[in-house]
Structure formats: C-alpha cells, structure tokens
Image 1: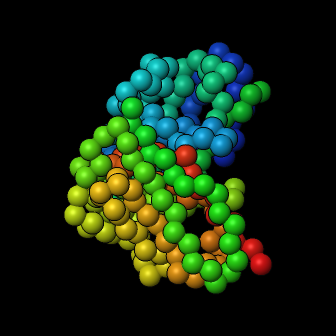
Image 2: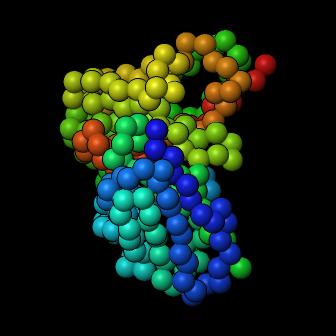
Length: 107
Length: 119
C-alpha cells in the first residue's frame, strides 16, 4: 500500500506567521491528494482536494501544492482557529491511505 | 446541511459483539459511498472499507477484511460497522465519511464513535 509520511510531526508557529506542512507518498499518487483539519473532539474537515483545490468555505489562506510524491499545505497567516492537526490522504492507489498527521501548535 | 451523525460511545468486553451506526441527512444518501476509518489512540487514520448506499456494493481494506462487517439500510439513510467478537485492540475512535465515487476524497465526516473494549 502507499505509505504517506508527513513532516514535521509537530510545528510550533506564532499567530500571523506562515506554516508549511509536508506530505510525501511512497509512490506516485498523481494529484489525488486531499488535506483535512482535525480539532480535538471534532470530526475532520476537508480543506483541499486534487492537491490544490480548496473545498467549499475554506479561507484563501489555505493552499495546497505538489503532485506525484511531494505535497505541501501552506497556511499563509495563522489564525487562532487554525491550531489543529492536519493530515493528508491519497485516493489514487488502492487502498486509500492517510498520513499520520502534523500538529500545528501555538509557539 | 449535509450531516453524518454517528451513534454514541460504547464500552464493551472482549468477545462481545457491537454494531455502530452513521446516519446521513441533508443529501441523497443513496448517491454516495460511505466509508469507515479507525483512529487508534495517538495514531493516524486507517481506512477500513466502504459501501455504496445505493446498492450495498462493499469493499474492504485487506487489513480489515474478515474482521468487521459494513452494511447499510438505505430506507433510513444509515450505514453500519459491526464486530462479531471484539478484541482489546479494537479500542479506537471510528469515523464514517462520505465520498461521491469509489476513488475520491472524503467531503463530509461523522463526529466519531469511541469504542472501548476492556475486561
């Protein structure tokens, strides 16, 4: 199966700063990559699909890039509500697999 | 509003059976695949399987084939995940999530069901 590796495991960022999260696939997933945000005790929320398309209602400060095996989620200016866990998801190769997550915490 | 509402937390003993549910509303349930994913304490998500609510076509991850059963009752827009004999290693939060086609992202998720298995 396709192994998804996210880095770093934890990212300490100050409000207003830029956050860059990475996701690497063990084999090509083309652009079939999604990003989700999960806050404690809440359901995951879709942020990005197709590697770079924002889901409905997602603020413009969230952007995704990459293709093949290397992907990035960028949060341009962190707001208080953005401190959460983010995980990537490939839906190109069967079975679909998820990364282990990156926790974005307040510095 | 699209919603997937899961059944409440469960506490069970090893060897007991369990069936948890995921009820959809705000969309045409039978047009979607409903997935189940496991999140063990402190770990990432693992996809377990999926079912097409329209015709009950079901696919399982090799890791979960034979360990769980996924089913659906389209008359009440509800998908199910069941175990015939729970193990301590089944301790986890289980999420349902919908997708529009078999190879796709998950665009809406349930709130999760915590399953605790302890003697």
